[in-house]
Length: 206
Image 1 (cartoon, rainbow, N blue to C red):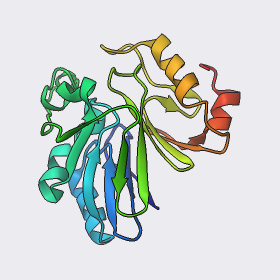
Image 2: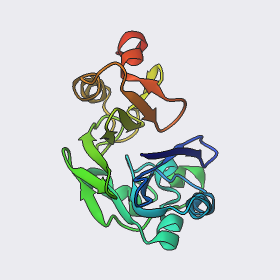
Image 3: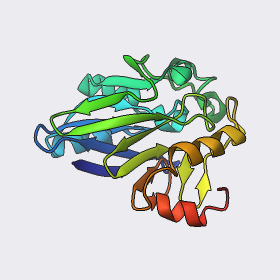
């Protein structure tokens, strides 16, 4: 499996390039900014983006959607509950930073249990984990999970934004993430990777 992490905006968001080694087809997960840098990385490594996947709709995770889509024609995927954030600068909070950033509308919606196929060898299972936002999702691929802003090393996503729920987030983490084996690696939207086992034993919020 192709797996690269890029930090592509001033808020330290992790953008993940994930895909099939055979076909060189990839998904760009959470292009929060600097679309030129993402596109150059794809070009330099001869990769073809077929999907832009947003784990949720906050501006720091969708800011590069427009530029990446314009240059790659990849399909934008998001959960329907966060779809408005793509096209509404108030809903995605970019207006709070004195800017009005939007994205093209979603090409397709993801639902809990969907499987996104990339090339010949990679499948991403969609896990709906609302709490940070109502449409937040995680993406499981074998022994790794891309957890967006649901879970961090030693912490969890904020729940004080509109649509957030601390109780719901904690319950979803326990029910839908901690059910996996200790060695499963969690790649978050911010900060370093961790493991399910480490968080189960050490995360003070859990």
